[in-house]
Every structure is written in structure tokens, then in C-alpha cells.
Image 1 (cartoon, rainbow, N blue to C red):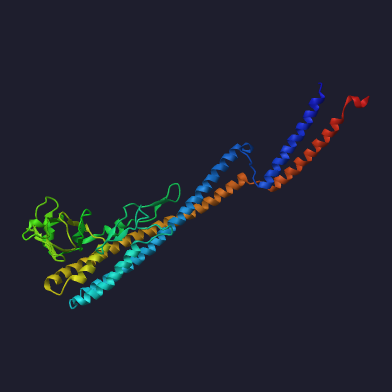
Image 2: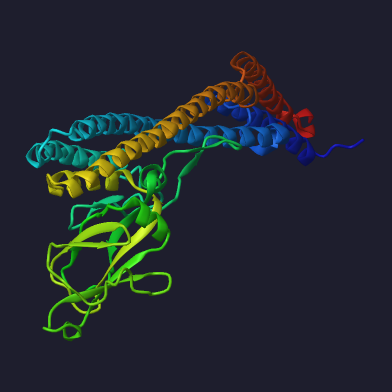
Amino acid sequence: MRIATLQQFNTGLNGILDNQGGVNKTQQQISTGRRVLTPADDPIAATKILQLQQELALNDQYTRNMTAADNRLKLEEATLKSVTENLERVKELTVKAGGGSLTITDRQAIAAEIYQLQEGLADLLNTKDAGGEYIFAGFKGSQMPFVKADNGRYEYQGDEGQRYLALSNSTTVATGDNGKALFVDVPAAKNTFTTQLNPLNKGTLQVNPGFVTDEEKYSEFYPDDLIITFNAESAVDPKGANFTVRRASDNRIVDGMANVAYSEGSAITAAGVTLSLNGKAEPGDQVLARSTPKQSVTDTIFRLNVGLNTLGDNPIDSETLDILIEDTLVNLTNAQASVSEIRSNLGARLNVVENTRSLAADVKVVNQEVLSKLADVDYAEAVSRLAQQTFMLEAAQQSYVKISRLSLFNQI
């Protein structure tokens, strides 16, 4: 077989280049510590390495989620612990205020401390997490959940959402509880009502929380609502501010309360409830007494505070006060039960976070070990291979030098 000189040169050169490529690749493996430099080096291993890297990155994200969930849940648990202590002190003062020998002056002194507890409770209900979001606002994390109205009553401005965080591919955990479910929708001692103003009112009306003064009569009226509507001043003679009280369901006038003269601060009694209005009313302004089987913890304390400050030392007010004290104690107990239930649930959620974190740590160790076996270079083997490839390169270079000198003309 005839071998051309050019073929001889190309063969020698290709051998040198192949050996140089092997040396360079081994040097890169040693310098980077990676066995698979490109997918072509080991397609199956490269695919598995990519999967493991993605799993480890996802594991890191889940770990961050666990830390965030753990911090938020612990903050909520600590906050609810303080809420429980606050409510316990209000109960103690409520019992004290029910003493038959106390005068309105004595009750007002108790109400002053209850007011401070109410403000402290509001601060707790408006607690923020490390990210500056309100933990009891539902999905409206940037919105203060409990906002104080002009009459001193706290109204819930959040929503009913509950946030969740993923801890793994198959595990999520609630990282908070909305204030409506926790503090607003608390079962009341008896069927009760809540007062509110029509947002379209044009005057400066304010309404107090009101009280049930005739339980039997209100029980017959429940679950209907009361609407107090202010009429034109010309509806009475002489002209002046006046209102009419109607049922919300059929617009019927209640207890003959039609075109009643309005006197700022005077009590309005209808269907077994009594409330008082302050401020100037414009024709068309409305006040609603909405029936409800629930009462927020803030309303319970607010109503108690108003009662202790305003109910006098007379038989009628004393009877109303007795009902208020009795209902308040039951409402506070229900509120504590609601908080206690969530605290127990928080403990279960924290256990889920801790167990998932432990499992994730174990899985991460296993994935890192498998990834190391697939991707990391065996330095002992690589150094030995580099020595062999270097020897082969040098041999190829030396043989090429000798072969390149062979020529027929050298023999002439």
C-alpha cells in the first residue's frame, strides 16, 4: 500500500492534536473540579446533573419559604399570647365593674383602664411582620386592618383572605389568619346588633354602639334591622330636625317612631334597643342598627367602655348595665376561645414547618452527594490520566519529528 508524504504528515499532526485535546480537557477538569464540562462529555450524567441542580435551587427557595413562614407564625403566636393576656385583664375589670356598690364615678375610673387596654389591643391587632405587612389584614397586607372611626369604634378594613407558602412540591402552610375570622366573627352571648352610619350621609352624625335594653322585645324583632332616617325639617311643626325608625325588611314604622324630634345626645329606644346620636343631621341621612349573632372583640370592649362611662345610678340603667356585664363576660370568653383555637392551630403549623425543614435538609444532603459523584472530578484519576496523556503527547511529537525527516532524497 502506498502512503503519500502528505498523508503521513496529516496523520502525525492529527495524532498530536488529539493528544493535545485530551491534555487540555483533563487540565480543565482538574482546574474547575468538574468532570462533565459539556453535555457531550456524558449526556446521561449531564441531564441528571441539571435535574439535581434545579432540585437544589428549588430546595433553597423552599428553605427560604420555611424561614419566612416560621418567623411569621411565631410572631402571630406571640401576638395572640399578648391578646389573651389583654382580654383576661379586661375580664377582671368587667367583673369588678359589676359590683353593685359601685357608682358611675367608680365605673368611669375602671373604664379609663379598659380604654387603655382597648388601645393596646388595637396595636396588637395591627401588628406588622418584618416585611412591614399587617399580619391580620388577609390579602391586604399594606392596609391597616383595624381602623379607629371618629366615634372611637374600631372597624375592620382587611379582607377574608389567608396567605399560604409552599414548603415543598406537595406541602403548603397557612402563614397568617385574617382578623375578620379571628376577632370580628366571634359568637355573641345573645343575638345582638351593630350600629353604623350610611356612608352617603351629608351631616356630621355620630352613633354610639347602643345596648339591648329589653331582651324579650328585641328577641321578637330579631333578625330584622332598624333604619333611622332623617326627614325634612318641614315634616314636623314647629320645623326642626326629626327622624323616623323603620324595619329594614318591609319599611314599616317601628313602635310609632315617625317624625320624632331629634335632640342631639338624647337616647333613641325602639324594638328593645337603645342608642344615642350626636352631631348635625341632614335630611336623608341614615343610621343602621344591623342585627347579628356575632360581635367583634373590639366592639365588645368599646360597648363596655361606653356603658361604664354613660350608664347612670338609676334602676333602668342598672338593669341595662347588668345585661351588659353578663354579655361582655360571655363575649370575652368566646373571643378567648377563638384566639386559643388559632393558637393551637399555629402550633400544628409550626410542627409542619419544622418537620418539612428536617426532611428537606436530608434530601439536600442526598442530592448533593449524588451530584458530587456525577459532576465532581476524581483528582487522583485525573492527575494519573494527565500524566499518561502528556507522555503520549510527547511521544507523538517526537515520532512526528523523526517521520517528518524521512525522504527518498536523503538517501541519494
